Length: 138
Image: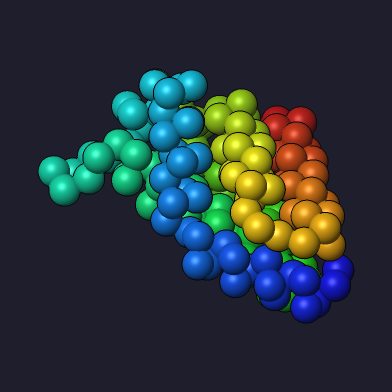
């Protein structure tokens, strides 16, 4: 992975975090309104803000870590944990895969270089493959 391009992409994800995460959260809630039931809504949160905070921002941080450390395997433990915990709250493989796909769709809308785009596609595919693997185990 080109470390300069990866760092630039990580910086873009940092500077665009809130609008990017809010758009993905809104799309998830439209497509999967049942996710609202799995959120612990407090009076100061909208469902979009809460889903953004507990899921999409976490994904954004994980992707940024993968970019900065050039270690896609950082995602492995997080995805195994998610598989072990989230289904109890009604979060499915489909929900997780959609979040990853839609997150990277938003990333591709950012003003990024072809090299950054290639890196984003590579990381997206890695995450989707890992989600598939953890759900095949059980």
